[in-house]
Image (cartoon, rainbow, N blue to C red; front, top):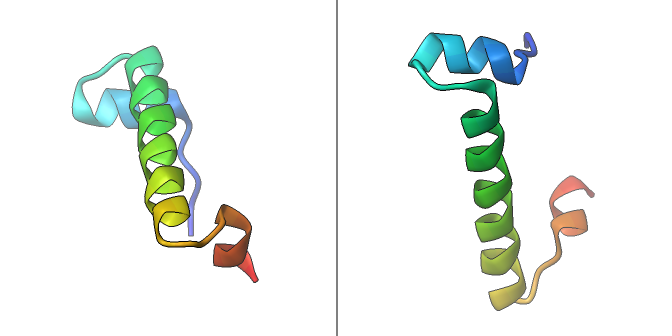
Length: 47
């Protein structure tokens, strides 16, 4: 499994590194909210 930088992802999909970062932050925030709504924590995903 290969890691990609935000810049790599941005180049691949035609967005800036900063926009990719913003999308990542918003996605993680939404995921956290969904987990909390369902009585879970982000830590529980990695146990």
